[in-house]
Image (cartoon, rainbow, N blue to C red; front, top):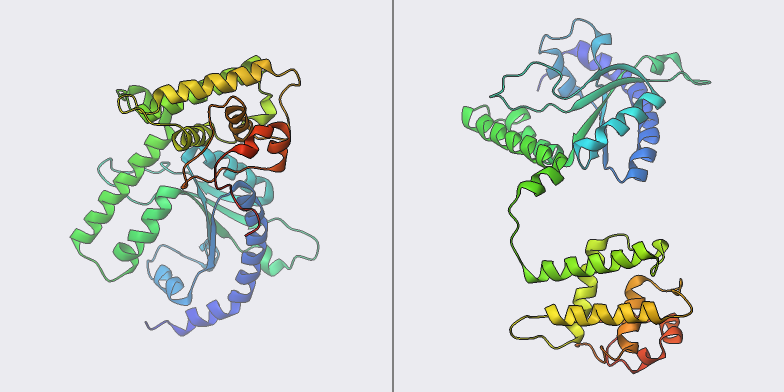
Length: 329
């Protein structure tokens, strides 16, 4: 595209200062986003994009431009947005904050509407005055909003597709994104109204989780030993049962799960030395199942993680017929 010489000259003049602002903003924000596990994106506005923005007629002077450097923090759900805003307000000067859903919008219209924090760098020692006044834009997007943006926004808004049908599809997808974000925000409330149906594997994992958590509540298992995720632990415990015990044709592994839980319970209750803090809950469970002779072998597709600490505390595990996880290869 043809860019007016005045725009090109101004862009070339301010670009080094914008890049410096972007570097400082990135250094500050990425430390926060990486600690939280939030993806971060940032870029300086290109010459062509700047020219197109000025041609909208919405800006009366250069100082009104607020996204010469723009970045985005991607949060899992809407519930994380307040903590991001709190961080931005403590580290930068807040020029303006345009919260999502703060503007008037036809209820039948669906468009991009994420929260935008317009900020400026706080004045520090040796900060050039040429960068202290440059504004930057931080968008706070949910994961669903970001997916919509990168897959459809460029096609329907910045690409060559001007037609009604293209914008219709983009709006329909945006409506779906908005609904998904609301469902995630009210996850528990939505789950409460769903009619529950039985599924043996899920039922078994639920019993596993409830039994182990009850042992934590009564002190048989120290709270420090709790797994990062009870969902993953219950899946792993049931997988161990399925890999080491004969499946019943009628009830599957339901009885086996109960047998395994009873064996672990007896081991916990019968121990006079307390829970060994050198073992994870999975390791202790495997050792208890071997010690009680409930598990003697596992199938070839399953590789249990057997360590020297386990063999010391549960010597019978040395007789387990298996192909253990190989730490060396």
